[in-house]
Structure formats: structure tokens, C-alpha cells
Amino acid sequence: MTHTEPAADAPARPIACTLGAGDQKTRLAEWRELRREGLLREHRDSLVLTTDWHRRGDVAARLEALVEAEKQCCAFLHFEVEKRGNLVRLRTVFPEGAESLLEAFTR
Image (cartoon, rainbow, N blue to C red; front, top):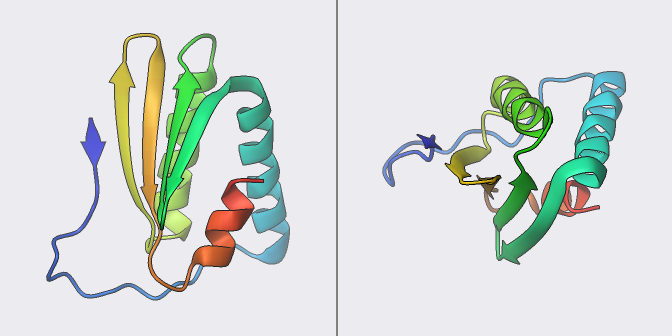
């Protein structure tokens, strides 16, 4: 399991993506394509999005690559990836103020 949630006393990071507008569109398209191909289910609880993904084919590798890419441009997001049998569970924690981004992730 990869766990990157900060300690409770860690300073808040600014809610800012470092990708340019064109790269943001490309990244969202990558997420949407992967969702169509491998998303099994999702659950949203306030500012936490938990998604389960197929582990077949290249879905898991693509998911892990996208998570690593997101860590580089959106340091304010916190990810936890866990492999469970034939699926991969991704838990994404969004900070207060990032509700619109959470909505974009679930479209």
C-alpha cells in the first residue's frame, strides 16, 4: 500500500495545479479514459473519493502512473493505493476548497 496522507500538524499546501491549461485537459482526458476502461465502483464521503479499479491488462499500471503524475502537479491531494486481489483501491483526499476539482474527478 502506498500512503501519502500528511500528519495532522503538517502545514496545508496551496490548492494549485502546476499544469498548464492544455496539459490539464489532457490529464482529465486520461482519467476519463481510464475510468471508462477500468473503474468498477466509486464512493464519495465528503472530501474523500474511494475508487475500485480492475487490475487486468494495463489498468493498474496506468492508474499508478496517473497517481504519480498527480503527485507531481497537485501536491495538495493525498493518495493511498492498495492492491486487493483482482482490484486496485485508490483513496484520494481533497482539501477544503477543492470541491470543484473533486467534481471534475467524478465526471
